[in-house]
Image 1: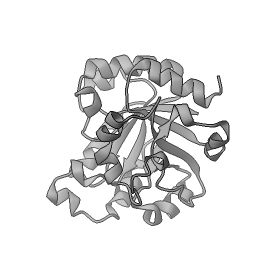
Image 2: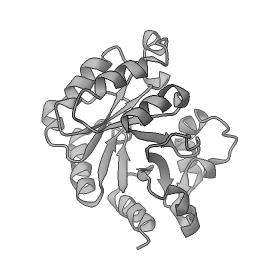
Image 3: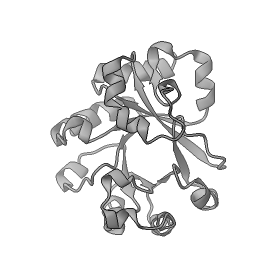
Image 4: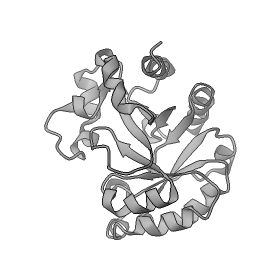
Length: 227
Protein backbone atom coordinates (compact mmCIF):
# COMPACT_ATOMS: atom_id res chain seq x y z
CA UNK A 1 0.00 0.00 0.00
CA UNK A 2 1.21 3.49 -0.84
CA UNK A 3 0.58 6.86 0.80
CA UNK A 4 1.73 10.44 0.38
CA UNK A 5 2.47 12.78 3.28
CA UNK A 6 1.88 16.53 3.20
CA UNK A 7 3.30 19.09 5.63
CA UNK A 8 1.12 22.15 6.05
CA UNK A 9 4.19 24.35 6.53
CA UNK A 10 5.52 23.12 3.20
CA UNK A 11 2.46 24.50 1.42
CA UNK A 12 2.29 27.66 3.59
CA UNK A 13 -0.97 26.59 5.23
CA UNK A 14 -2.74 26.98 1.89
CA UNK A 15 -5.84 24.86 2.59
CA UNK A 16 -7.10 25.24 -0.94
CA UNK A 17 -3.90 23.64 -2.14
CA UNK A 18 -4.23 20.95 0.55
CA UNK A 19 -7.61 19.98 -0.84
CA UNK A 20 -6.23 20.03 -4.37
CA UNK A 21 -3.40 17.69 -3.34
CA UNK A 22 -5.82 15.48 -1.42
CA UNK A 23 -8.16 15.19 -4.40
CA UNK A 24 -5.32 13.96 -6.61
CA UNK A 25 -3.60 11.79 -4.00
CA UNK A 26 -6.85 10.08 -2.96
CA UNK A 27 -7.40 8.96 -6.55
CA UNK A 28 -3.95 7.38 -6.93
CA UNK A 29 -2.88 6.32 -3.41
CA UNK A 30 -4.30 4.37 -0.50
CA UNK A 31 -3.77 7.15 2.07
CA UNK A 32 -2.99 10.85 2.37
CA UNK A 33 -1.09 11.47 5.61
CA UNK A 34 -1.25 15.05 6.90
CA UNK A 35 1.69 15.80 9.19
CA UNK A 36 1.18 17.17 12.70
CA UNK A 37 3.14 20.42 12.79
CA UNK A 38 -0.11 22.20 13.63
CA UNK A 39 -3.73 21.31 14.18
CA UNK A 40 -6.25 21.17 11.37
CA UNK A 41 -9.56 22.40 12.79
CA UNK A 42 -11.51 23.95 9.92
CA UNK A 43 -14.59 21.75 9.53
CA UNK A 44 -15.14 22.82 5.94
CA UNK A 45 -11.70 21.39 5.14
CA UNK A 46 -12.10 18.26 7.26
CA UNK A 47 -15.41 17.41 5.60
CA UNK A 48 -13.81 17.42 2.13
CA UNK A 49 -10.74 15.30 2.90
CA UNK A 50 -10.68 11.75 1.53
CA UNK A 51 -8.50 8.78 2.58
CA UNK A 52 -6.86 11.03 5.16
CA UNK A 53 -4.66 10.07 8.09
CA UNK A 54 -4.64 12.91 10.62
CA UNK A 55 -2.10 13.18 13.39
CA UNK A 56 -2.60 13.83 17.10
CA UNK A 57 0.44 14.87 19.12
CA UNK A 58 -0.11 13.24 22.50
CA UNK A 59 1.80 15.92 24.41
CA UNK A 60 -0.47 18.74 23.27
CA UNK A 61 -2.72 20.17 25.99
CA UNK A 62 -5.74 19.72 23.72
CA UNK A 63 -4.83 16.25 22.45
CA UNK A 64 -7.95 14.55 23.86
CA UNK A 65 -10.23 17.19 22.31
CA UNK A 66 -8.40 16.93 18.99
CA UNK A 67 -8.68 13.15 19.05
CA UNK A 68 -12.41 13.36 19.63
CA UNK A 69 -12.84 15.84 16.77
CA UNK A 70 -10.88 13.75 14.26
CA UNK A 71 -12.62 10.55 15.38
CA UNK A 72 -15.97 12.05 14.34
CA UNK A 73 -14.82 11.82 10.71
CA UNK A 74 -13.96 8.83 8.55
CA UNK A 75 -10.21 9.25 9.06
CA UNK A 76 -7.41 7.02 10.22
CA UNK A 77 -5.73 8.66 13.21
CA UNK A 78 -1.99 8.61 13.87
CA UNK A 79 -1.04 9.17 17.51
CA UNK A 80 2.53 10.41 17.99
CA UNK A 81 4.48 11.62 20.99
CA UNK A 82 4.91 15.16 19.64
CA UNK A 83 8.02 17.03 18.58
CA UNK A 84 9.17 19.73 20.98
CA UNK A 85 9.70 22.06 18.01
CA UNK A 86 5.90 22.30 17.76
CA UNK A 87 5.07 22.22 21.49
CA UNK A 88 5.03 24.75 24.29
CA UNK A 89 7.51 24.39 27.15
CA UNK A 90 4.75 23.02 29.40
CA UNK A 91 3.69 20.49 26.77
CA UNK A 92 7.28 19.39 26.17
CA UNK A 93 7.57 18.50 29.86
CA UNK A 94 4.77 15.93 29.77
CA UNK A 95 6.00 12.39 30.34
CA UNK A 96 6.37 10.03 27.37
CA UNK A 97 3.77 7.74 28.92
CA UNK A 98 1.11 10.33 28.06
CA UNK A 99 0.95 8.69 24.64
CA UNK A 100 -0.55 5.61 26.30
CA UNK A 101 -3.33 7.73 27.82
CA UNK A 102 -4.21 9.03 24.37
CA UNK A 103 -4.06 5.55 22.86
CA UNK A 104 -6.37 4.17 25.55
CA UNK A 105 -8.93 6.75 24.48
CA UNK A 106 -8.23 6.33 20.76
CA UNK A 107 -9.13 2.64 20.68
CA UNK A 108 -12.59 3.43 22.04
CA UNK A 109 -13.41 5.01 18.67
CA UNK A 110 -14.05 3.12 15.45
CA UNK A 111 -11.21 4.76 13.51
CA UNK A 112 -8.14 2.78 12.49
CA UNK A 113 -5.20 3.82 14.70
CA UNK A 114 -1.56 4.31 13.68
CA UNK A 115 1.13 4.85 16.32
CA UNK A 116 4.28 6.87 15.68
CA UNK A 117 7.00 4.89 17.44
CA UNK A 118 9.97 7.27 17.23
CA UNK A 119 11.25 7.90 20.75
CA UNK A 120 8.63 5.67 22.41
CA UNK A 121 9.29 2.24 20.93
CA UNK A 122 9.48 0.46 24.31
CA UNK A 123 6.53 2.36 25.79
CA UNK A 124 4.09 1.53 22.96
CA UNK A 125 5.23 -1.95 21.88
CA UNK A 126 2.90 -4.00 24.10
CA UNK A 127 -0.08 -1.72 23.49
CA UNK A 128 0.33 -1.86 19.70
CA UNK A 129 0.62 -5.64 19.67
CA UNK A 130 -2.27 -6.20 22.10
CA UNK A 131 -4.63 -4.00 20.09
CA UNK A 132 -3.35 -4.84 16.59
CA UNK A 133 -2.52 -1.23 15.72
CA UNK A 134 -0.33 0.06 12.88
CA UNK A 135 3.26 0.73 13.93
CA UNK A 136 4.54 3.85 12.12
CA UNK A 137 8.27 4.55 12.02
CA UNK A 138 10.63 6.96 10.30
CA UNK A 139 12.97 5.68 7.58
CA UNK A 140 16.54 5.57 8.86
CA UNK A 141 15.50 5.46 12.52
CA UNK A 142 15.17 1.70 12.61
CA UNK A 143 12.32 -0.73 12.09
CA UNK A 144 11.12 -1.35 15.66
CA UNK A 145 10.76 -4.93 16.83
CA UNK A 146 6.99 -4.78 17.09
CA UNK A 147 4.75 -7.54 15.80
CA UNK A 148 2.18 -5.54 13.86
CA UNK A 149 1.30 -4.06 10.50
CA UNK A 150 3.95 -1.44 9.76
CA UNK A 151 3.98 1.90 7.99
CA UNK A 152 7.22 3.70 7.15
CA UNK A 153 7.66 7.44 6.53
CA UNK A 154 10.16 8.10 3.73
CA UNK A 155 11.25 11.59 2.67
CA UNK A 156 12.30 11.46 -0.98
CA UNK A 157 13.48 13.48 -3.93
CA UNK A 158 13.83 12.71 -7.60
CA UNK A 159 17.51 13.69 -7.42
CA UNK A 160 19.38 15.13 -4.44
CA UNK A 161 21.16 18.48 -4.66
CA UNK A 162 22.62 20.98 -2.18
CA UNK A 163 19.50 23.17 -2.06
CA UNK A 164 17.28 20.25 -1.11
CA UNK A 165 19.78 19.01 1.44
CA UNK A 166 19.92 22.46 3.01
CA UNK A 167 16.11 22.63 3.18
CA UNK A 168 16.10 19.36 5.16
CA UNK A 169 18.84 20.45 7.58
CA UNK A 170 16.53 20.72 10.60
CA UNK A 171 14.83 17.40 9.85
CA UNK A 172 18.14 15.59 9.54
CA UNK A 173 19.53 17.34 12.60
CA UNK A 174 16.77 15.78 14.72
CA UNK A 175 17.69 12.27 13.66
CA UNK A 176 19.97 10.23 15.87
CA UNK A 177 23.15 8.96 14.20
CA UNK A 178 23.03 11.55 11.42
CA UNK A 179 26.54 12.53 10.43
CA UNK A 180 26.10 13.73 6.88
CA UNK A 181 24.82 10.31 5.77
CA UNK A 182 21.61 11.69 4.23
CA UNK A 183 21.20 8.55 2.10
CA UNK A 184 20.22 6.65 5.25
CA UNK A 185 17.32 9.04 5.93
CA UNK A 186 16.19 10.35 2.54
CA UNK A 187 15.64 8.36 -0.65
CA UNK A 188 16.78 9.60 -4.01
CA UNK A 189 14.51 7.96 -6.59
CA UNK A 190 17.30 8.24 -9.13
CA UNK A 191 19.47 5.93 -7.01
CA UNK A 192 16.77 3.55 -5.76
CA UNK A 193 17.33 -0.05 -6.84
CA UNK A 194 14.80 -2.85 -6.97
CA UNK A 195 16.59 -4.77 -4.24
CA UNK A 196 16.22 -1.74 -1.94
CA UNK A 197 12.46 -2.20 -2.07
CA UNK A 198 12.58 -5.63 -0.39
CA UNK A 199 12.99 -4.05 3.07
CA UNK A 200 9.54 -2.45 2.68
CA UNK A 201 7.71 -5.64 1.77
CA UNK A 202 4.23 -5.73 3.33
CA UNK A 203 4.62 -2.15 4.66
CA UNK A 204 2.38 0.82 4.11
CA UNK A 205 4.90 3.09 2.39
CA UNK A 206 4.35 6.76 3.17
CA UNK A 207 6.35 8.94 0.82
CA UNK A 208 7.04 12.52 1.78
CA UNK A 209 7.90 14.42 -1.44
CA UNK A 210 10.30 17.19 -0.48
CA UNK A 211 9.26 18.90 -3.72
CA UNK A 212 5.49 18.60 -3.56
CA UNK A 213 4.58 18.85 -7.21
CA UNK A 214 2.24 16.19 -8.51
CA UNK A 215 4.61 14.87 -11.17
CA UNK A 216 7.09 14.08 -8.41
CA UNK A 217 4.34 12.34 -6.45
CA UNK A 218 3.44 10.13 -9.41
CA UNK A 219 7.12 9.32 -10.01
CA UNK A 220 7.23 7.92 -6.48
CA UNK A 221 4.27 5.68 -7.19
CA UNK A 222 5.70 4.47 -10.48
CA UNK A 223 9.08 3.73 -8.87
CA UNK A 224 7.65 1.73 -6.00
CA UNK A 225 5.22 -0.18 -8.19
CA UNK A 226 7.94 -0.91 -10.74
CA UNK A 227 6.24 0.85 -13.63
